[in-house]
Amino acid sequence: MLCGRRLRVKRIVPLLGFFVAISWGQTPAPTSAVELTVKLISGQTTQLGPQDLAKLARVHVKGVAHDGKSHDYEGVSLCDVLVKAGAPAADALRGKEMADYVVAEAADGYKVVFSVTELDPDFGNQRIIIADKADGQSRSAQEGPLRLVVPGDKRQARWVRMLTTLTIARAQ
Image 1 (cartoon, rainbow, N blue to C red):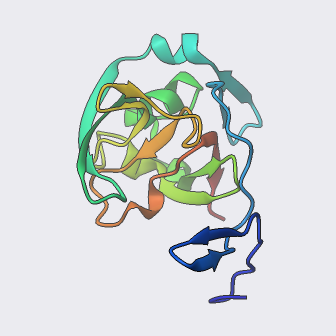
Image 2 (cartoon, rainbow, N blue to C red):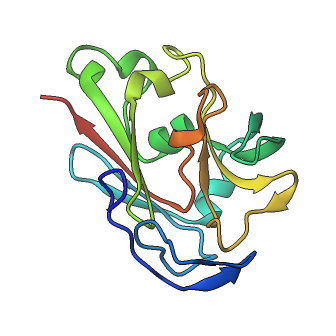
């Protein structure tokens, strides 16, 4: 264990005279299929494929990735995807809906949380997107076809690569 995390050895390879044998968590097989599942509080589940995402407005954001370089990301607004799936937005966000949150999950089980209000442009001041391109190029199979990009965050911890599922829930 390292820092409370279990290490899973996937492969031992020589690197600069050392043997490297570390792999964090599970690494799923790369996939190029673009499919996003959105689960609402009501229990309704929506599958969005490339044709569904193509019908939404395309947006661009600039952001500094883990490599420390600025990139131009292209995709669709996370808020637009949630609205397309039937989530409340704008004037419908009041009362109990103010306690709603979104869990974004990757193929490898990595999860992050956003409040629904921070995603809505009537409340928040961030443009969070689900990117399928970086610097004009489609995302690599290793990174997964979809990546959540949160350019306003100081750290990229909520930039979920290999995005597969968005689940809306309510704090009790």
